[in-house]
Image (cartoon, rainbow, N blue to C red):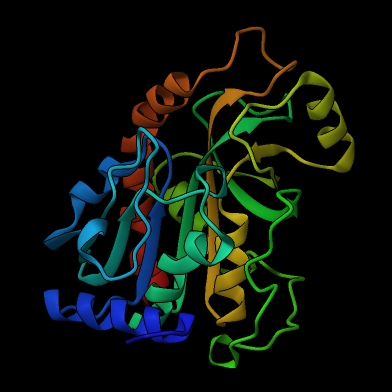
Length: 276
């Protein structure tokens, strides 16, 4: 019987490895409304989260809850269609469990996508933005608590949480697809309620360009394991007080689905550059 988090992630990784002969080099996590990007994979094997030992189950609309292993331009990848969030009642260990499993599978580069509210008024709804840095206001850190040294050191550098090298490759891929990628600072909150206009004004004063309820804990866990991270936000709505319309999760999903084709085209060009 597995007891430690390291043992449980190992059991999950062994189970996944039995489903596919492919050994993914790159992991991709798809946020709200972005799950259909997994449909572009070749030689694909889909595994429901519910069948993977110890895997948490997503309860949020727009997160279908499958791990798809296949290839993008011959590069083996593991794509998570959906994720779990702390606001669903999950612990930090549970939120980051899938990322740790990807690391145990051998993934060394990770693309984290999300739906985000735009704080910077220069951003527009439906725009893809590279995350250059983050601010963690979620009140959670996945490496707090009992230390399992197999995952990496307790104290580790976060001065380049989001790889400058991978951002350069993403910019190159974007230009080849005939669009420019903005960069910004992502601030993470617990949720699930959307932010108030006063909170958004405070976040903007702190230097945030985007706000969301995911990604940061996954980034911290990945960096502890030495995994290189690229973050991509889809601006699915303008944050409270920036836009005039009331915020809704339906709008988040609708905008995510509208930008899926652009994200798929970007990843089709980016993954071969990352896999080299």
